[in-house]
Length: 64
Image 1 (cartoon, rainbow, N blue to C red):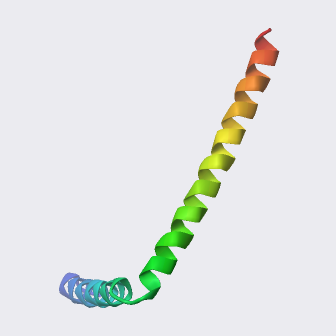
Image 2: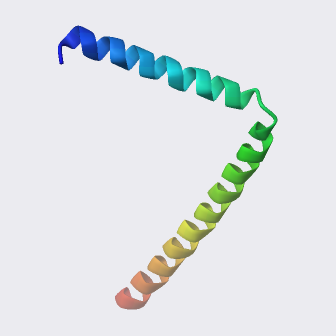
């Protein structure tokens, strides 16, 4: 595939993704998606915070 063909395909794919994202963000489901993403982000933060605390406790126990 030539460079110009790759550029055209990339442009078309990018435009299609942009249209899909724009359509979705203007729909009513946007709020639902944002809520789900926030919930998932909060769960991941809590999970990583717990792992960090556990690692710190284990490290302190090893060094003590």
